[in-house]
Amino acid sequence: KQRVLSGVQPTGNYHLGNYLGAIRNWVEGQSEYENYLFVADLHAITVPHEPKQLASDTYTLVALYLACGLDLTHSTIFVQSHVSAHSELTWLLNCITPLNWLQDMIQFKEKAVKQGENVSAGLLDYPVLMASDILLYQADKVPVGEDQKQHLELTRDIAARFNHLFAKPDRPVLKLPDPLIRKEGARVMSLADGTRKMSKSDPSDLSRINLLDPPDQIQYKIKRCKTDPVRGLIFDDPERPECNNLLTLYTLLSGKTKEEVAAECQDMGWGQFKPLLTETTIAALKPIQEKYQAITEDKSYLESVLRDGRVKAEAIANQTLAQVKAALGYSVPL
Ligand code: ATP
Ligand code: MG
Image (cartoon, rainbow, N blue to C red; front, side):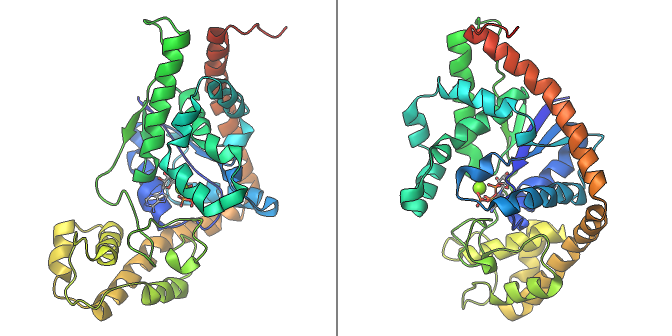
C-alpha cells in the first residue's frame, strides 16, 4: 500500500474547509492507503499562540479526526511534537535549503505582511518543517489543498537536493512525494469574502462554519454570510465568488452532483437557498458532533490512541532520521 501523510494545525476553530478540503478526503481514501495523520503542533507556534490552549486544541483535533471517521486499523494518528525526529530532521534539512527558496513562498509572504514586525524565523522555516514531516515517513502521497501545493513542490525540491548532494544516484535516501489533489471542493472560501479561503486564523468567526458550531450558530452565520443581489444561482461566475462558494458547499455537504445542484438552484433566490444550505449543513455535521461528544467523554481513550500512534510513528521516523544522519556523515552516538 502507498503511504499517505497529512496533518492539521491545532489552532482551534476547526472548520468546514479543514473537513471538506482535508479530513473528509483522508476518511474516504483511508482503506486504500497506509495513513499517517498527525496534529501539527510544531507548526502551530510559527505564529503567536496561546500556551493555555495548545494541549486542549490538540485533544480536540484528535477527537475530531476520530469523530469524522478515521479508523485506527488504516490510520496512525499522532502528535508531531511527540516524535522528536520532526524537529531534528528540520535542522538537518535547514542546512541544505537555500534561503531564497523560503523567501519565495506565497504563504510566508502573505502571513509575514499580516504580522508586520512580529515575524519569527519559524514562520519562514515552516516549509522545511513540513518537508521533514513528509520525508520522515517516506510518504508516497500527500493530500494537499491548493494552499499547500507550493510547499509540497518545495518538499520535492529539498528531497531531490538532499539525494543529489548526499546519496548515491541509485540509492536515494529520501522519497519524493506526489500530491493527491481532489478537483471539487479543494478550496472552501470565507463566508465574508468569496475570494479568500476559509481559515482558522481569520479573526472573524462569522467568516467560517466551525465543525463544532451548534445548529443555531450555523443558521446565524449562513443568514449573515455575504451574497449578492442577483437572482438565480450559478456556479463558476468569476463576478460571483460567494455564489460559487455557497453552491459548492451545498454540493459537497448534500452529496449531490454539481449538475444536480446547478439544475436545482438555477432559479432560486438567496431567501430560498439559505435555509436549504443551513439544513444540509446542520444535518451533515450532526453525526460528527455526536461522535465527538462520545469520544471526549473518555480522555484515557484519546491518550491511548496517541501513545500507540507515537510508537508506530517513531519506528518509521527514527529509521529515516538515522539514514539521513549517516548520509551526512555523522558519527553514531555511543
Ligand atoms: P491557518 O489559518 O491557521 O493556516 P487553516 O484553516 O489554513 O488554518 P491548516 O491547519 O493550515 O488550516 O490546514 C489544515 C488542512 O486543511 C490542510 O490540508 C489545508 O489544505 C486544509 N484547508 C485549510 N483551509 C482550507 C480551505 N479553506 N479549503 C480547503 N482546505 C483547507
Ligand atoms: Mg493554513
